[in-house]
Image (cartoon, rainbow, N blue to C red):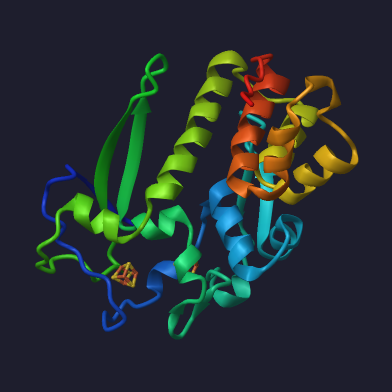
Length: 247
Ligand code: SF4
Ligand code: SF4
């Protein structure tokens, strides 16, 4: 599919409006090839009342990146439906409140550059003009930043940026392909969160870390804290970076 990428700044006008009256309604939810991040999966499985394993099994497929060994999780592809998203309906997205970050941002692309020392994040944006999308050319009073705020993508960006930092660290410290055990640890801690929690509390996989009880109690109930801890655990298991958990 041909497309144009037009760089924009966050204070530029956003010449775009998506609504159900557009003739292309739902077109962007077909022909999918969409990677899901750990935070996307967390929000979707909560929306659907599923365990992470139940969600992953029913709705996703995954493969290991050929050069990196990193797990890549995508919506399960279904040629019979034109590879449409399992959540698209004639009325639109059935999981709208918890749709993935990339769905929220479309047709905006966001890239970040993070300073390794200060962790300061610089954001860069571009509009992706694809022929099927008829939302362009509409006059709105919104800037790119205001439009993005309306998509409530802040938490997705926050958590997805932590994943990007982990991947960039992996590429620096362990360039090349992860071995099978390392890839499995990455998948367990970041994507199959409920199984990770089970292994922590029923198989005692953290027994050598001597973690404070109060912190362990938090991991029992707080999904976002467990996801952050998963990143720290992967850094420890793969790169030997010390776990720095404060009571
Ligand atoms: S999750 Fe919702 S918005 Fe995203 S592709 Fe599926 S139906 Fe479309
Ligand atoms: S194709 Fe573009 S304008 Fe049409 S529904 Fe999707 S995002 Fe909105």
